[in-house]
Length: 174
Image (cartoon, rainbow, N blue to C red; front, side, top):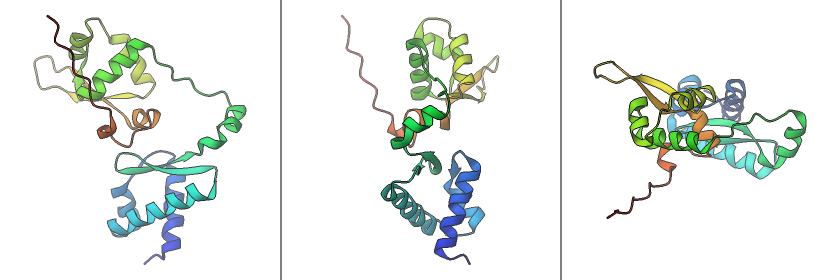
């Protein structure tokens, strides 16, 4: 059985090598450590990273964890490389919001809400890895379904979709 410090080191190595989200269940399976121990150790590691002023952080994302850079050092990282732009037009943000709140959703359903064609915007969101194909709908024509991705959660600083703000009610128009 691994000692606590060995478990911490193994978790750090796993998160570093993956360079993306690692599910809590996957950590438990890899390390063969009970779930509650892993949760406790993850909280401890996250607190240590936050308190030490290190260049990296570990953040919880959708029942998993990801190693990210400390925002305090962003000025240095900007100097290192040109940041990848993920600017979204108002139409792309509108489409992304429809997908986030209605997922899984088809292109036709998105276009019905927006009132305009959305094929190019959906392609752009797929390219930016903010949405992904989520199978097909079991109806005639079997249209593709779309859903948001882990990248969406990271870009918008969400742990899970439950962190989305509540939708505003539309006022009744007479």
